[in-house]
View 1: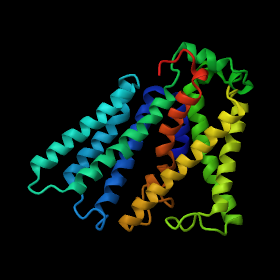
View 2 (view 1 turned 90 degrees about the vertical axis):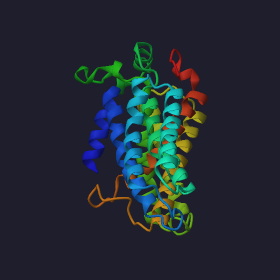
View 3 (view 1 turned 30 degrees about the vertical axis):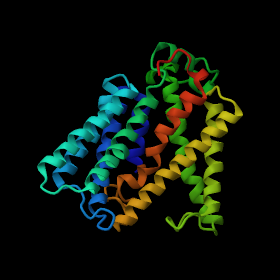
Length: 302
């Protein structure tokens, strides 16, 4: 987990094709585990996709972030990619199988959305304000931290608004997880939701407060030009998006009767067990920023 975290931090700062490839790897691992979960949902999905379908869908999901990056991060490209991938898969399901089932189509469609479309929005978020105008804007935020960023690592100009937004989102998710765990473990008494018995109301409050607190701390550290209301709203958006991702994976694991989504991370379960909080957060933060805070990204092609 530490190695994965260190690699993630490095590619976030590097951005560009490195980050796109990292998200492509994330999509690959997420889709592999998703289709394994789907294949084990004997009650909800009595007719899961066949293995050749799963393999093809994993390959397609893996390509989503690369395609998006290669086409300049345009929203219509990722939408068309998802619909094209689903169209090809649906056609093959109807023509190659003697007796196709509706559950196969729905599980494939959600797989493309969950493991390809959603992770790709981290590429869009990281690429926000890409270019000289944005770099100059980020460097003039008044942040002592950014001003002192070493030239060996690109200097202050490397801190585009996309990098700032991505760093804030990732660190707020970590703060959410830590705050919810510590407060829930220490004070948790009231169950939050039957779906996840270990989650408590107290833990949720601790996670929310920690996320909003981290947003304000990063606002100060990175010279983020946002008001109190905007910062509070962003913290809330990140927290609830992270919770939504966590609960969605809990539903899938329960339906599949699996404790973990996989075993790729020794002692921590599968990749989705660690990445679930990030799936809905990238797209939520992206649309929050481009709709609620457009003034922060003047000169940016969205």
